[in-house]
Amino acid sequence: MRVRGFLKSALCIAALLCLSTCEIASWAQSRATSSAEAVTLNNRGLELYQKGKPEEAIALFRQALAINTEFPEALSNLGLALDATGKDDEAVADFEQAMKLKPTDAITESNLGFALYHQKKYADAAAAYQESLALNPKFPQAYNGLGDVLFASGKTDEAIAAYRKAIQLSPHYLDAMNNLAAALDSKHQWDEAMQVYKQALALSPNALDIRVNYAASLQRAKRKEEAISNYREIVSARPSDAHARFELGSLLYLEGQLDEAIANLEKSLALNSNQPEAEFTLAHAYQDQNKLAEAIDAYEKGLALHPNDAHALYNLGNALLANSDAGEAADSYRKALEIQPDFPEALQALGAALVRTHDLDGAEAAFRKLVALEPQNAEAQFNLGNVLFAKKHYQVAVDSYRVAILLNPQHAHAHYNLAIALATLKQYDEARKEFSEAHRLDPNFTPPKDSSKH
Image (cartoon, rainbow, N blue to C red; front, side):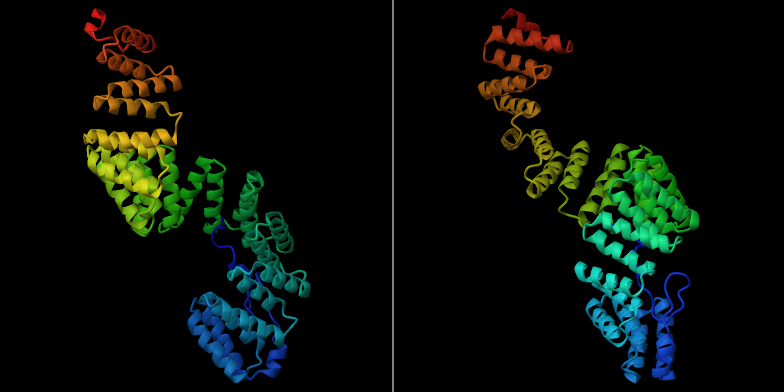
């Protein structure tokens, strides 16, 4: 999975001073061929683009091009602004037109690669980045963009090589370092990934997006304490980061730190209520604290956002059942099974809930489906036997108990219930043997007082 903050640096703004992150396009030719007014409009458009106002920038770039239709820098910058507003097709057309006017512009060719990447035209994007590098072999942003395309194409080793080249050319290139670490992470090369993240953070300790990715990598590497420490730093520096609070809360939940987990999950949801996974994790935490009403509420909020989550419906059913609402629990289990019919835990729980509602026919049907799904499930056979016994189908109950014992000879409760069923059928000798075996396996199981009379 790609992480945040990867690709902006792959876009270089033509004719704009970009500190150390991109080359400065030559203005000599454009000044000679473009009117001063067009240049002024282009520069004003760049200022607006930099301020996060791409729509307003687009209008000014178009005005510049209306004055001078052969102004490659304005075309390239228009492509950037269009790309920023999701108009990838128009952006590609403008970048291509700019390249026709200025075929040696490595920056525009690189930006074309970025727009094609957005269109998921990975082969074309790779070709554009390679052409950019042919024009300027020392262009780190093109190597970084090429790495992104290769990574998205499943060519992780080649992507890693491209990111390394970008960093070689620009040792303080944070985005390339971030991308390299993520690519290494995807190959479970944890130690090197962590080292690269640490190098990036040493260069820029306040690069919170990189720290988020570092924390996530630590989490995947099962270095939970370090991940928690980094997420705490992130939420301290950026309290409104809903994603970081969710990840922190989730990790704290797994570590059993329920109060702090709940506090962070609640804050995350206050910042962004559209997080079903946060609701579900919060529900788990409440349930572990036996706060069933709060757990049920959180499950229901999560399901309102993601109604087809079979596991969440199953967990809601468990909370309802624990809250003595067997009927509602059964409904939740049924919904889970509509979505995922081969869900053994839901079938087991549905059978148990229906027993509590005295719907023995429904319970029998659930347990029979479970037995068909998992023929080697001793507990399913045992529960089926119990329902059949309750329905006074004693002989078939005996058959189910025997299958349960065949699957699990150490199942003391199955031996005991088999003994009761046999005694009910007046098969006293066999019943005594089963009572004895149940007691041997678990001394808490003792024969009824009158069993010795038979």
